[in-house]
Image (cartoon, rainbow over all chains, first blue to last red; front, side, top):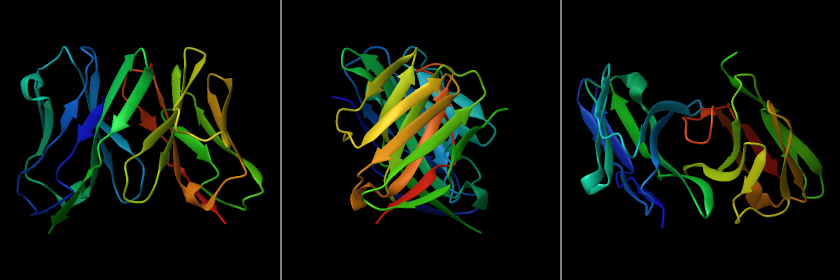
Length: 116
Length: 112
């Protein structure tokens, strides 16, 4: 069965702290795609990163970095030197296409509060 | 044009009304999606239209019906909705099904 777990419901940090958002997924497929999206208070979902199941390379983009480990079925997201503008809900998502058809499932989300 | 537009932004309707939500993209994307998002919950995929084929989440009731008049437009027709259908309806598009999705601002629907 397809499942995405974001165990951290809410995280509160002080500006300039580093913070890691956890994502654990379950799938039976060998080909799948993982994503992180940000949903600020304005409500519009913004794409952050995509990884396919064959690409375990970690990635850094400015203050953001992602750690994909197939061995533990995890795709964690770290924000370095957090800023108030990082306050948002962050969703991890999994897409796959199998005999049951194409599906995208989102984790429950982690609400991040960054205080000045 | 690198955005997904949705109209209307807000919609209030009674349970006997028929209304439609509209979604448009001009990025040449081949896949478009409708999601439903309740407050403090993640988006739930309702429909996917890609490669000129519609995929439906089996849990979506028939009072929701999508329509894709062309590759840039995706409508969601609403009929005989229930108060529990009140939610934010998000449209998204992507170059194909496996790429990142670009989301519109959503339509906030209230069913009285």
